[in-house]
Length: 464
Image 1 (tube, helix red, strand yellow):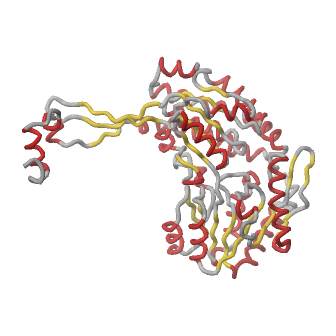
Image 2 (cartoon, one colour; image 1 turned 90 degrees about the horizontal axis):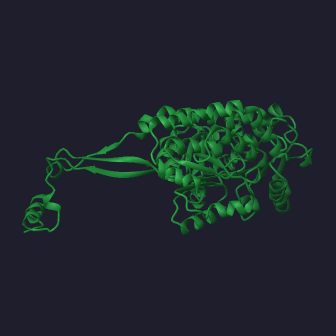
Image 3 (cartoon, one colour; image 1 turned 180 degrees about the vertical axis):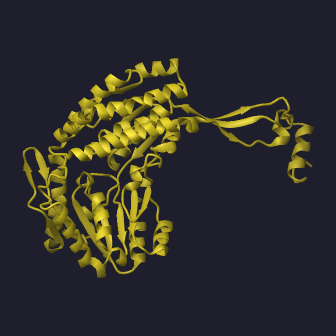
């Protein structure tokens, strides 16, 4: 493998080399911003230009610059204490080595951010990287290959496009680390294949992220904040609001505020150019099955905000669909939504909301809107998730200096910030023995000197 040979020849690039590589990324993204927006629009059928610029250009450029600025602190040795009587002035420390060659399998929903974002910490850690873009975003995949090819030597970073067969083969290779972003079922398969070669993996998966409202928090401002997260990529976001838990007494008010937000900000939700389309027919049909299933159980609980779902001019569009108290076992109840459907589940007592979250799988994010600090703290301490937001949703994934990832079924490992740097590094423990050390008592063969040492450190309990 080209990159493996290059790594073995120069396994540990200097801080200056790493910084220079990282500083290529902002210029690459800004120079190609228009092309990125056009490719996203092509892959989705319709994708708002401003959404592309915010999340797949500016956000990623900032992440690269942050990593470059942080390198000196990240790469510094992490010194640890030693027992002075044995080790004198010896030194012990963790040094963060490059792992080597890392594979990255990004998802289709943020194909640039999930390709180049983690690349920032991978390069910061001194690695070489091969990216396999999703076959569901072919225009972006081709553009990534062109951009990366023009910016980095192939033995440093490369892009390999291909279909499902390549994706399946990718996880069988002997990587030094593998990052996969996508759904839980494929994540299991990736991890199983990687385990054959004992390849460490970072899995960024999904989850039914709950969003809890307390009664006083059902306000226009908070509903707008929640909807702002839900509308990102039209709900096609792993850390978005999957469903809302709302007091039964505030249900009508909550639904009314959602309707008001849609009518005021978007008009006809389905045809609004402010929403990106559902990416393709496969995902469109999946979402329609969820809606049809809910209607077949109780159509009175399904509220569609916008004109009828349709495929037009290469774009798959749907109304925002509210489903009130979806039936247990229904498709919406069992599966991550990942689209413009918002289940709303009522509760009477706050402990009911906590219990519901506790009995489900650990999600990528838990969100709560409340002015009651004691309830927020109860929810935080009673649950486990990859991230947690108060009076907002999804923002934990937008911070360049905050480790991002899941737990349990929603994933493992972290990228972003120093946590990402450490994720893609080998933390090698080192000891430098000084001349004034006296390690004889712990060195074999263990004789009278070891006996006296044990008596001293155990107060005579051992060594007598």
